Structure formats: C-alpha cells, structure tokens
Image 1 (cartoon, rainbow, N blue to C red):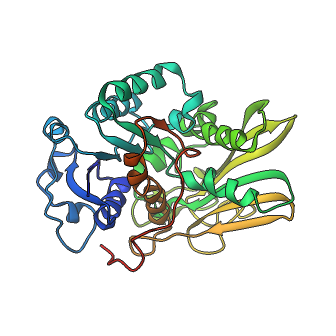
Image 2 (image 1 turned 120 degrees about the vertical axis):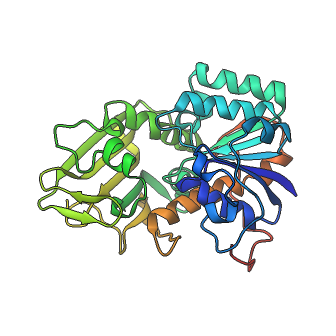
Length: 359
C-alpha cells in the first residue's frame, strides 16, 4: 500500500479523501488543513463520508512530511497563492513524495513552463527523488486526453473544441464565483479570471499539449471573452441574490491558431442562472456538462455528465478531475522520478476497483 496524504480539504480535497480512501493500492495516512477549526476532525467527516476513517486532520506540515509519505495529493488552491502553493509542493517533492495537483496552471504543459517555475521543481526532484504531475480541475482530462483519444476516430480533423458549460449557482465557492469570475458584479468590473492574458495563462498549456500530441505548430494563442448581464434578479441557495444588471453569464475561448485559423479551442460557458444568455451553448440537462466536438469527417460530439455529492454536477466534475490525479499515483510511484504531464501519464482502466464499496 502506498502511504498517501491529502493536503487541503476544500472542494478538491473532499473528493481526494474519498478517492484515496477507496483506492486498493493507496492508504490514507494523513490529512493536512490550514483552518484551525478543522484540526483534529476525522478525514471521513472532512471528506463528506458517513463514517470515520481513523485519520485526524493536522496543521503540522513538518511532522507529516517527516514521516516520508510516498504520495501527496496537493488540493490546496493556487489561484491567489501560486508562490505559496509552489513552495508547499517543492517541500513535498524534496521529502521524496510523488505529488499530484491541479494547483499550478503553468505546469499543465511542463515542457513550456517558465524557467523560474520549472527549474526549482526539477531541482527538488533531483535532490529528493520525488515526482510531480499537474492536471486541471475543469477537468484536465476533458481538455487533453479525451479530445486526443476521440480525434483518432476520424478520417479528417478540422477543429477540436472542448467545452465546459456550467450553472455556477450550485458551485460552493462564493469568493471565486463573485470575485474571480465576476458573477453579480457590475458590468464595468474586470474579473481577474477574465483579464487579458489570464485565460491563456490558465488554459493555454492544455492547448499546447494537444498541439504537441497532434504534431502541429501553433502560430499563437488568442482569447475571446463575452459577458452578459442578468435581466432579472435571481436568488441562489448558497450565495444569496445576484441583482439584475450585474454580470450573469461569461463565455470565453482560448484558441490555438494553426496556419491562421482557430483549430484547437477550449471554451467555457458559465452562468449564474439558466435564463441568462439562452442563445449560448447549454448542457443537455441539469446544471452542467463537459463536451468535446471534433469538426471533421465524421463530425464527432461527446458529452460527459458527472454527478457527485447528491447529484451536483460541479462536484462531479471536481471528482473526475481528482480521479485522474489520484488514479495516476501508482503509475508515478513505479516510474522514475520526474516532472510529468498529461501526455506522459496514461489514463488506465479502474483495475481492482470494479464493484468496490463506495466510501
């Protein structure tokens, strides 16, 4: 059994606790938290399970890493604390751990990451013998391995489009919804997530990964952003009211330009209510879906709908992204120490997990 810790217990950490607890090759040995109110609580409680796991959350990073865990699921956010997240991850790698995380956007495409980010990671790997694999939460597999797999089914491929379509009224992260994405803010507010160059910084690595796998050269990355106001005031269970006239929907694309044309596109369509921007792409039903469209011959369209935590689609998307990371741990443990990306780490069948009891 591979000794594994989960670092962070927010939306991603909750799913990570459940994934590690049921994986036949992994043993959950510690959970690290930042909030003093969570210290001492059982991992099963923090993971939203109906039973205890016998692992109590701690804030003592030094003690946990001194025990030399073989793997770390780093689930703490890197959105507004990228330097701190990098420092934490480097500590774990230097302790000899295999680290999987969605928290460092620039390392989705690690070969083209800036030296100031990549070099310290490589130095930590050389010193400590650990490894690092970074994949997204939107989810990563929907913007790399899935579209690449489907592209191999056609005779010709003209455009690859990856879509995330979601109603954020069910998303349990109000600061991100209102501040980073700008829902409920005046239309003259500039959301940090939509500022020029930011979408390409976050999702451009996945566009470059697909281009590398397809053997094409990108001319450039382009960003297209559109925003719509709410026509009426709407109310949500978790985040209260969003007033009429404030931002109610966002649509943006990160386009990989090949020979002057957008050929590899990652698109996000996000609403705070289904009534806003009804002419934009919508999920088949419910509050969200991920979709891959291959324009070519034949035209191929695949929609994935995942649910978790009582039928929540946002939680389902998080859970599948976490599953991609957690299920890569045993492969990474068997591989040589290194810095890996989605093209390196295979997506494998759920060996040993069919029919296992749910947490």
